[in-house]
Image 1 (spheres, rainbow, N blue to C red):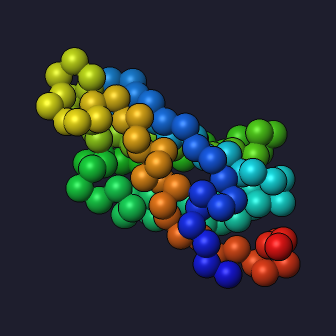
Image 2 (tube, one colour):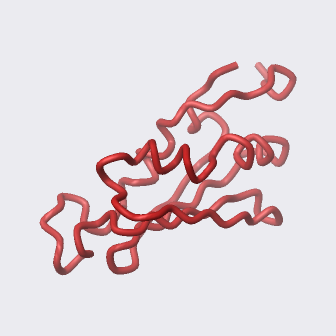
Length: 110
């Protein structure tokens, strides 16, 4: 079943210079493998086309059921230099949660 990511995860985001940091945390332990499978570097980079101008790095945190992404060169120089509306990347977590993921039917409960 195709669902928006916000149905199975929550996220937080912030910045360090010109790099946005987006953490995605599975709402249930059984949904973490879905995140690992579906949220690839390539897919996240494509989702942030036109925003992330550098590379995307992904870090797996299985003990937390989470993934952390660094989106390099995506804040127009960073908080003090950028003319972007969101120079600190605070809304990037919301943007990430709009991604649609394929979740096996047996993992979906009514």
